[in-house]
Image 1 (cartoon, rainbow, N blue to C red):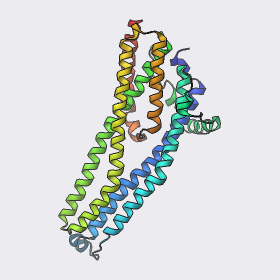
Image 2: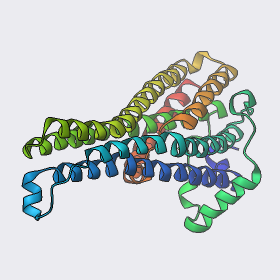
Image 3: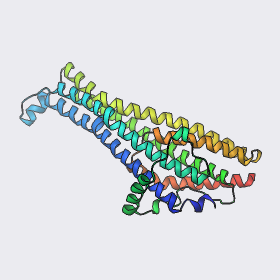
Length: 310
């Protein structure tokens, strides 16, 4: 049976739903991290700057207060909470989700489970709990026809190449956009804080303390996320080159050689899914439809090229 029809069986739908819910749980914690590192620290810093300003306090008819030291303490607490507690739980959810998706992919693609890489499979009870919860809530429509497989005339190994190309291309495009957004928001927040502080004629000490307190969590979160996405994009592009080369050389390769390449790429996909920064669901939903059309067209073109080489 081809991937096109097999992927819609209950076994695969349940695992797609389970992994999706676990990724969503990790993203909710990631959203909490954004609220702490970016939103909370930005608000606290601007409030501190305002309370330490003669202009603002006179305008609001309140006493001038310097809470710069409290802002610095808040910054340290936010960094500690994020790195010690939230980060570990995010990683735990992502690893379990990646394992479930890996089990799904390997069974669908006809590949053996790589225990030295992925460890033990996730318990069936956990998969059922998370998968059925999400299907009961939202149905299973969005999990059907998950992979674009426009041709069942190709060997399974060649169909797998198309699926892997779709995953990598989709991920690369999203992460490029996310990094652009991160860069723009980071520059705007820091620039706004500096301009706001300068306009209020505050002391150099007050400005420095507040801006440094703001930079700590924002740079720690923003820069690490930007760096992770950049590394992931570079890895995606390297893997996409491997896929493209295999497709170009398909007529000179045996099916066993193509399968061997898909196994190596699949190993890398698991590692990526387990460690990559989770793209927020809101952004995913906004870009999904347009990207699905692009991936569909691209998959059709790749399938045609592979058929011509058969």
